[in-house]
Structures are given as structure tokens and as C-alpha cells.
Length: 470
Image 1 (tube, rainbow, N blue to C red):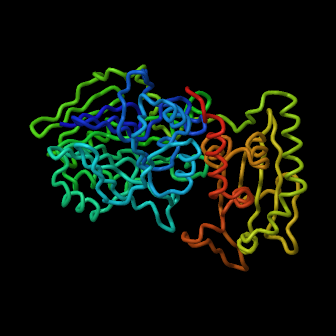
Image 2 (image 1 turned 90 degrees about the horizontal axis):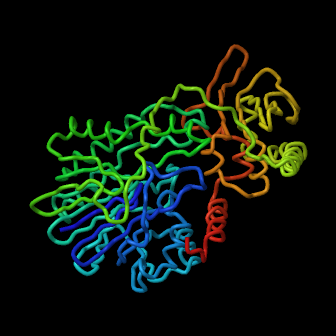
């Protein structure tokens, strides 16, 4: 028999008779650069969590790979024993962070390479996110756990296809218990002016995976967080599917598959003869408040304006000087050196940067459609093809290298849109959809979202939490 206990979000404690596995631990609020909190909120008695044999880290997203929790675990020899094995993807940045935190016994996993630990076989499953067009092109994996009697599969965030599903069936036959992806997250769509509706094609793949896998039992997995406090308005735009909705759709799409809610503190008991979920029966975690109603998807409601997050008057004054200096003395020069300049000029782009301060805004414009070298000018010239609105606090942090686009694009204080077209004598042209890079925002070109930015972001957290016991 295998038991799985949901601690929160994607963090599971998987227990066989002899082996205990912990996955993707995120135990502290706030998460993801302090943008999100767990939802539902939990009471976690960490001193009651049993010692673990295996710590599995599926990928580097911060709602799965939380530096603060990892820094806590590596110092807690009761939970993370000296001989505990750390399973990790072949991701150089992730591995560097683990080494910097001084983890031992790190084992890099390979797709479908079985790992025997005491009485269970652990098999990482692949993800299709690593491609030239994927937004998150770094290794990740799902996880199969079998004790020879029953098999569970935690899909986590992995993207799979029929070949992967077929291979799982060849290895283990029918999966007994399946933690399934269930919600296509629309993170960032609000800031980027992208579609704010359920992406039907992506959602259908989740249902098709359940259908093709044909498990005995399925529960919704991961995606149990929300935006906090002043960022709460973003909950209206990000979570287009609820557990209730997913389970209703599974009932209609795969009526033979048993299904149920699965919340923090619930314990699933999986045996060959019976599968049951005991609600709120965990000895170490329970729901503090069921606040999932805050995730109601209503993408047509009023939103607050962009604003600086700086309150201190001295820091605010310094911030404005940094922003003014960047815009007046660096912006145009950096734009003129960009590889995208030719594209902006071809499409006659009129670019507007609007910086939001304390109750006022400042606008600068660059007209790439005029003959001669583009110039920076203050104010609006009556046409916008490409727009970036950003708070002075976020622009200052970008200039000084103290933040990442992960935070800037998800905190609600950066918003962009484009209306790209080209006018000729009697002609009207729009760019092909597969060449949308013509609309790449100048700020994102000047401060590229690359491996260096990711590394700075994570190492900042390492420096903050390394050596801390809480």
C-alpha cells in the first residue's frame, strides 16, 4: 500500500511501508518572490513531518523549487537524514543552487530510468517543455512511484504526449492513482494584453491525458496558490479552471475514472483492493482557511492603476533620479543599438513608455516611422503602436539589476500592448503571426530575460536564506 498526503500546492509526502518521499516542498508564505501565497492556506507542524528517504525536485519554477524551504530542510537533519537522496533534473542552475546550499547525495535523473529505493521503484517521466519555442526551456519531470502492488503518478507540471502515456502503461500497466494537471495558468496574460479566457486546446490536453492514461483514480494536482494582498486583483485573470470544474469535466469526459477533490491535509490510501481519501486526516498539516473562493475567474472587472511601490520619500527621490537618468541618457542609445531596430523602423512603430510614480505619470515617445534617426521626445504624439507602462519602482529595479521579469511581469505594475501595422501608398500590412518578435518591447530587449537574470534572482534568495533555520 502507498499513502500520499498533500501538504500544499505541489508538495506531496508519499509513503510506502519502508520509504518516504517528499516532492517539491514549499512551506512558507510568501512564494515566488513574495507575489503569491498558498491557497488554501495551511497549518503545517514541521516538527511532526516524518524523516524522508528521498527529496524529489521536479523543476526550477519557484512554486516547486523554493530556496527558503530548501535552506530550512538542509539544516534539519531530523527530516532530511544524512543518507537522504536528492533527485533533481539535469539543470545546471538548479544544481548550482543545491550545491551552494550544501545539499549532499544529489542524483541527476534521466527520463524513464528506474531508481530502486528500499521497497519502491521511482521512475522520472519526461516533459515536452524543452523545445526551441517553449517559454520554459529547462528540464523537468513527473514521477512514478510503485511498490510492486500499486503505482501512483504525479504529473506535476510536465507536458506529455501519447508516446509517454504508452510507455507508462508498458512499464506499470494501469496507474492506480494519478495527480493530474488541471488548470492552464494565465500568468502574465494580463500584463501582456493576451487572451484572458480559458485556452481550450491546452485544457483539452489535460482531459485527454486522463482519458489515455485510464487510471483507477484521479485527483487535481498542483496550482494551489493565489496572489496576495494588493496583488489579489490578479486572481481574476490567472486561474480559469477550479478543482470543481475539472472534476465535473472529467466525470463527463472519462466517466469510468474515479475522481475526488484533494486538499492539503487529505491522505490518500492506495492499495490493490481499495482507494480512499481520508479528509483532513494528516497528523502534521491541515487547512487553515478554505479561501479558494478568492480565485474566481472574472477577467472583466476593474483593476487598480500601476503605481510605484516606494513609500519612503528619500528612496522615492533617489528612484526618480535613476529613472530620469536612464530614460534621458540611456534609453535611446540602447534602442538604436538593438538588433530589433530595423524591424521597428520597417513597421513604422510609434513606441510609448509611460512611467507611473506617486499619483502622476511621465510619458516618452520614440517615432520609428519618421525619416532619419529616431529621437526620444517627452509626451504623446497621438499614435501608439507599441506601449510599455511601468512603475518607477520596477523600472529603477531593472536599471539597477535588483529584480527579474518574473517579478515585474507578474506583480501588476508592468503592462504592455501592441497594434503593429504598416501603411504604404494605398496599402495596409500587418506582420505574420509567426514574426511577432517585431513587437518585442524595448525594455525587455534592454534588460533581457536570460539565464544571467534567473541566476541573479535565485542567488539573491540563496544569500537571504542560507543558514537560516526558519
